[in-house]
Length: 70
Image (cartoon, rainbow, N blue to C red; front, side, top):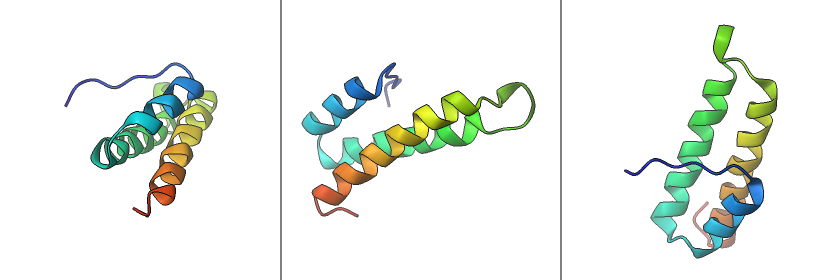
């Protein structure tokens, strides 16, 4: 799978709209994994990044819900 990265929530949401169902699920999983990584103790802990990735995960879950996938 290609590397995924979005700097803004707006670009992430824009890509969600044009993605197929499996891509949206991959984006949700990616955001969830990044959210978990940002909450690791030590050097990896970054509350601001955690919030950023949480908003991306929630947006992906909402898109899946709109498509009847959740």
